[in-house]
Image (tube, rainbow, N blue to C red):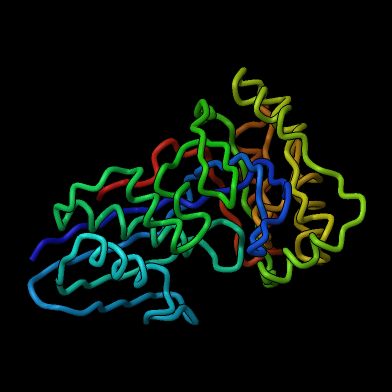
Length: 293
């Protein structure tokens, strides 16, 4: 038996714009993705035999072929032309329905980890080709760091990594947002205020964190009405965040704090928020998508 335990990083969308809609119904994006230091832990085991077994410590998460991690295991076995018995145990810290890529991070971690354990020899680019068949966020969560995502999320341009000193707080209430419903709402916008992707790219290239915080934006905020998002944005700003923006199609919100915010100020803000929201996490940019334990 071969085993591996790894941590798979979540993501936020520093900026997220919807640029069009393809004939097949999928929407095209221009988004700056950022890996962050919020992780799910994945335990993998491979042995002779056949079949996939999946367990998860988070209630309500499917532990069958409907789970992206299960699908990832099946996909890499198929791509490698192999048959093995795979055991997966997920320990969730990334909240579901948050726009932080929790399920996609699990899929990415399973693809990467099984590639190592099975000795497939697939490049990261090949893993991303497999990953995009599972979900639009999976390719980035295999790449990690900071990147411009275009197409449906599969066209990735790596960017300069953000400094680890750019601290943030992630907040999510009890509400979640349906991604299909959010995209339908986008289609109804008549005069959408698009985020300034070019300004964000300049900010990343020059490492101008003040410009970056001014340039954060998410088109989905104009399309959805979620009381938890509105309240999280307001509270983060009141507690010292220089910007507070929803990530993905929601419903988590990240607040970016200025460089002069002290560790104590951020810790105090998080303590206040934990009295009001079920998920609150202090985080920083993560340059690598996985940590092997």
